[in-house]
Length: 317
Ligand SMILES: NC(=O)c1ccc[n+]([C@@H]2O[C@H](COP(=O)([O-])OP(=O)(O)OC[C@H]3O[C@@H](n4cnc5c(N)ncnc54)[C@H](OP(=O)(O)O)[C@@H]3O)[C@@H](O)[C@H]2O)c1
Image (cartoon, rainbow, N blue to C red; front, side, top):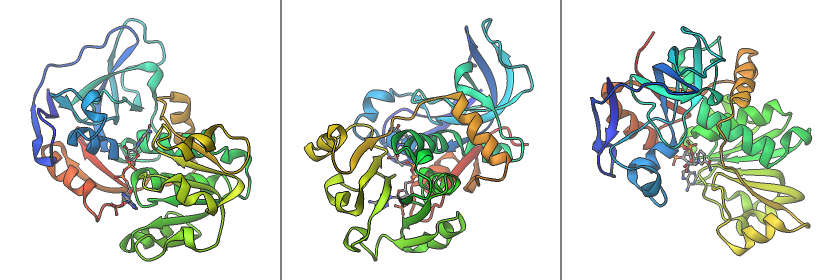
């Protein structure tokens, strides 16, 4: 079968579409015929080999951390799925999604939202789960009706889901993104947009209950005074990197520090599918590319014009 892999770390040009062995499902794994796989910020970091990515992605490495597709086989312990089921899943850091077929443990798989295309379904798992788990589990947004939430990097994959989810939880949302992307962030449902190149929100003398740093790009010490006394800063960096972070993570007084480590929970995927099918959460699909154009897909996703999600279509329907 065909898969998009890199043999050495580097720019988008290190990606190649090549023949690889067919995967065989074992134990509780399902075999998925991949219809589409999204490009996440994490894929770009793994491909570049930046920081801890070198320890996670051992070349040759097949990119693609999440997919939507059809169940076509399973190991002997699979009980939850039948052939032909339309599913979506977060594979995890092992990758393998940008390929014709992939095997995934059934506990990571859920029925795909019925009201959207496979390309839209594939856009959801990693970015949607990260936004959900950061806002709900990290910031307790489901318990803070009427909260004021600032989403930094609001036009990115995680950021664009975060705007929609914060609105779902009844928050008033300030979306911060670069100037050319502000209309897109408004369309996602943000009540207010700020241009990160023109306005430093930490100098406005205002406060928010939750600040979600999606790139992540904001030191906690810088945003602390922009949080309410019981406010929460949530980062996509899972661990504290400064003493100020550690103090705000364990301290009992003042704004709190929190970091998200995304979990492959099928019940959270099912929750996102219900919101999408109920018309309460929009899938921010930007552009699709065929597998043969994986290099162009990565170039687009890491370029300055990307808004929302870039998706690679494999077995298109
Ligand atoms: N902890 C976890 O478990 C976990 C899980 C998933 C993802 N992540 C991490 O989350 C991050 C975001 O992922 P993603 O998929 O949302 O990426 P993405 O789709 O590439 O979006 C990133 C967004 O951040 C913006 N941005 C980047 N640097 C910025 C800066 N210095 N100032 C302002 N905006 C900036 C980008 O805007 P421009 O394009 O205009 O620069 C883009 O809109 C990645 O670093 C990823 O590794 C962590």
